[in-house]
Length: 400
Ligand code: PLP
Image 1 (cartoon, rainbow, N blue to C red):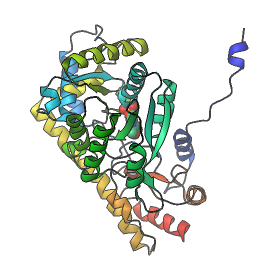
Image 2: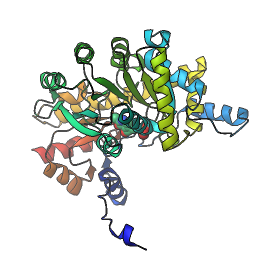
Image 3: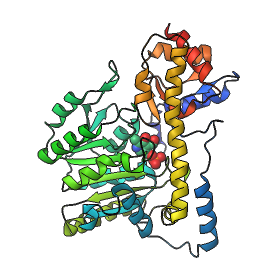
Image 4: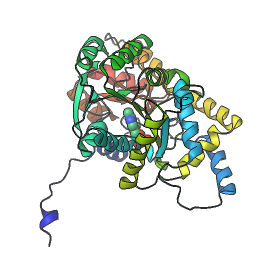
């Protein structure tokens, strides 16, 4: 025995976790963490939302069993999540062609979707944006799906390679899947505008490939409804679609692992068939999702009062992030930086690429204790009124 594990070679450590360890060990009094992608308040803390605390208290008092919940998870959570994503009166909901399941986080939703796609088409290719969230590639490859990229972010002009994106998607086979980010594109912060969504949706309907929309930041861009524009319009325009949602960021439920996977089919009969396959896939991965996060979310979304409180708390998070973007841009100007960083204020969500070299990223870390990943992707929530001055000054020195 021992022959099997002996064949292993170590996998590289996760770069973001490595960065976090280094940051924690750094004793510089003005150190700045722009690595990890979680929301932080002005004091650098990731708080539990007040609506979440209230919902948890309510659940603690009223929960009466811990019996198995079943592979779909909670029916109320699933209904409320699909209404949040699509709006309560969406034609696809009215036509009963939407099926939603609770999943362990957005990552769980994506993995369920990946295995589902593999069952739909064992030779499927999934097209992801260049660049995309690093985990997308590993996750789909782990399900045996080939991953290819379409052009997306232009690092030179800090804008969308929209014509190239359309040209690439125009050649995607109708047997394949195209992954789109609903909003707050990770890692670029560069979203499709409304007219660009309209064009991509028309193209998707024309070409016949299946869209998979990953919505990990609903409410972090422009608002809950605004951020779902593409999701809603796409669902009305195509027969088949997959949506993977996460409650990690917008409900601050990171460690509870709660998200949702939604399948939309041509009609109710096909939706039922697709759903049976989805349930089979779930049974073969984790059998049933955890219940606590879903219980919190359904308590919030099912109560007018708690839902309003959540929307208010979400607005605070969104406005802080958007405010940080403008604050950094203004501060860089104030420090006399000639280079144009206005794009940071125009992009959306948790991330943007600063657009500096890997050597400059390393210098920021070594000499100024400013931490970000090598690509110069910065986590906007790590900025605050307390560190923006030092941060802008450090960036100014490194790029001058
Ligand atoms: N999709 C994208 C684009 C993300 O950025 C993330 C998390 O960072 C996820 C999915 C997964 O989120 P979760 O923590 O809910 O698994």
